[in-house]
Image (spheres, helix red, strand yellow):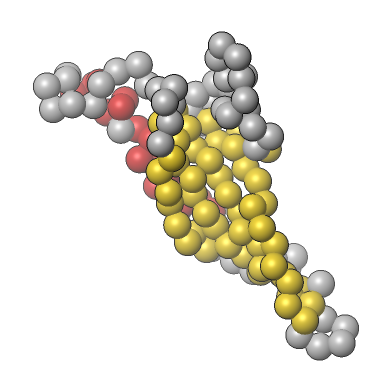
Length: 127
């Protein structure tokens, strides 16, 4: 996705930093937030994995109605970005795992000026 300046595994890049986070914005940080297992038969287990994508941006412009339109577009670009991520991943699947389904978006409140949303996706796979 060319709109993203940084894509990586989430190891706390935007949580634990001194002066500036070691990412470029906008960014997507990806992790498997949980994997639940269920036994189907003696030889088959089923895994349900939740994938968490933290999408963050740090726009330097305001998105108020009084701001110029270019500022508003930049300030709210994260919404379009999440829509693009969701549409790209929705239904992606194959022989190794079932199609990915988007299940939630949650906004994280931050005090450092970074706008952050958590996108949760889910897929299932047999073991």
